[in-house]
Length: 290
Image (cartoon, rainbow, N blue to C red; front, side, top):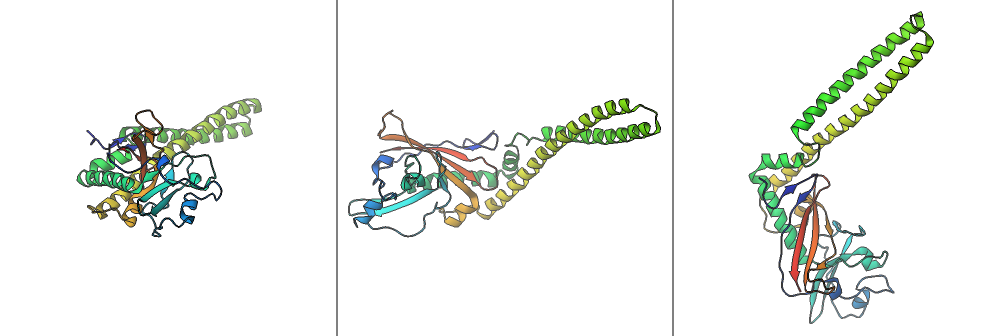
């Protein structure tokens, strides 16, 4: 039985957890508005000189994306006498280049969620390496050994029949040249065999492609395990560690659980796409209270 935080289905590692955070403003409606004239989010706020910017590069910079428009998420940091904020917002929303919402998420909540899931995944992988490798290679539809064995057998049969048809076609041509069969009969038979051979070649190519995907999945799983063995345990999420494990992270817009647009209890989904293990990602639902 799989651990509760990993459910494999068609290249998708799915994890749902609840993270409660009281206090603070996490909603897109509770941060300085983007300037409609300058096209830069928080630009007017900065221009007033009312805050002090923090220049260092963010932990998730370059690997965080908006779920709706696909734009890279930009980090916004500011500090006043009364308030300090560190968050990410959608690049299209910030620059007003597309009709998209803020997808606002606090950096501390994002970091905590990704760190927790990464610890769970790496801990499970380290303790149950063989099982984890099997899960990764079988998360595609082509992953099971039984299916692969059947496909290999089907591919061998197709290749054998293709060779037989080539030999038959050669004999037909010789019979046509020597006059054993008429030109009309040769044309009729060769057309049938040619159509069958063409269909078999297309089938063989598709089967070969599917089997290659399985081999690739196995190789990628081993690459991921090499990273896991490198970081058997870690205290904090660093830029180097994050980028070795994670290909990208996708942020969905938050939604109020009480049905109100500015509701205090909100849920926000995050998707983590781990390196080397396909297109799937770990989905998370972060629930917090404003």
